[in-house]
Length: 485
Image 1 (cartoon, rainbow, N blue to C red):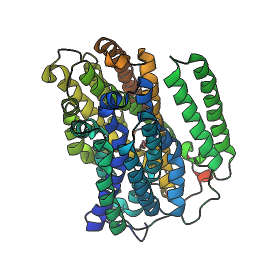
Image 2: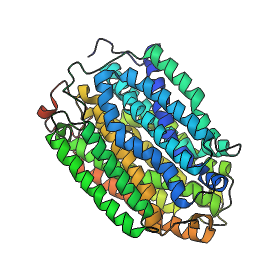
Image 3: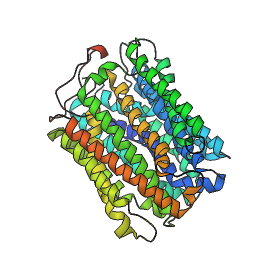
């Protein structure tokens, strides 16, 4: 136990969790809040569907590509230091987004925003993992994941309220939130770092990972309008992905230590993350756009549609984390995705003329219940499967998987549904594409549930493994799945 271990009941312990939750919450919020603003941005800036996809994906791309490097930097140079630096960077980039006069400049500012989020997000959970007393850690992670998860779900609601005034406030609101976050972190969070960094930073690995994600995303977004170029860039992206895997296996100081994936629980939990976070991103993108374009709802009304899911996640996530600590995570990590799949299946039929109580609310309630069962146990499982000295790296890996899932979903689902150009403004075309893509999201949730049920061993969550070198990390028998929200 580190000498700086804080009890959750103390003011500093609560302040640390609040700072970490607010910082990571901002990062996750900006991954979702912009979806409710997309129709308004499109009208104001004259943007095509591809430009709107890049407004979402530029942020997710740099976040997913650099979050592993951010976790490594946090472990080496100080988790609080990287958290504060990332928060300040994020705020400045948010200001650029708020004043962007064209779609192109907005996309560039969103990419810069993702860089700040990549520094801030893994550091937030790593601060909790390294500084909170082991007896309080599961509950602290449950609180963190619940509050952070709320930011993911509350995005359409908050975005709707802000867009009713001006879509630029979606980004400007980050400035005062950052001030509070930085003050809390500097006051309450002790500085922690890895005492013996294993060598130089894996910049080549970071470059290959970024190239792979960027190329594959471009290929998916441009496949309809530029098929020849998309094929060539996609092949290059797959080659870069293969190069990333080879690099991480051979590098003396890899961003992703191979020993992390020697643990079966870590592997399975990240595979589950890939499936369910692709589905979450797809549902949150498609539903709010469908409600505005095809049902004619205002941004605020469309955002309010998801409020019941937010309330469920807020009220019950900490209890779900504690339940997984007592019973093991296998059951919630199977039941949660399957429940969300059922909710998504109900939402497939949402179309013109539907009322909220009969057409939308039942699916939203099941969707929210599934996420409540899923988010906290997945986070605690991922972190429990990693050595404590690699907390930032493990957090970065899981975050990268989650953000990559969202990136591929936003890029690929419109392609799967046959939506391109300005067709998203046509209610008939939008409804047909929405239903096809939502079926795919329900299938992804079901796949995640099957992975949790079949891939995880029964067993209880245990404290993170003690210090050991990445190469020495061996498969554990605890059966606890681990995920970072």
